[in-house]
Image 1 (tube, helix red, strand yellow):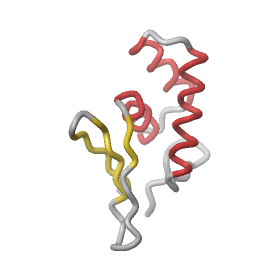
Image 2: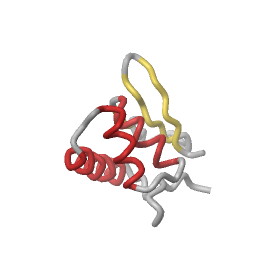
Image 3: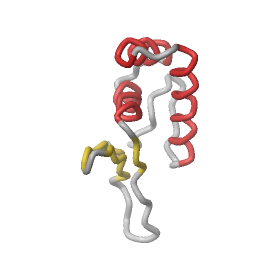
Image 4: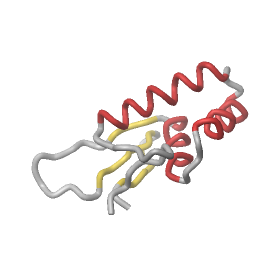
Length: 93
């Protein structure tokens, strides 16, 4: 698996394990909610299932959760992580 999620110093860190020297690509940091979204995405959960799960876990409004997921996916894209049609992050071969 290309990307590894780690927890240290109270934060979650998404590491690109395929890096080879320079230029160095810093890990993407995220909070617990981001880690929850990531873990559900790599399991292949669709957007609605992720939204439902987060609404239950955090007691959050559905509209806010949907917006947060869209922002998180944009952050992943900015980090260079592409998603398949099913919404699962592309882990590389």
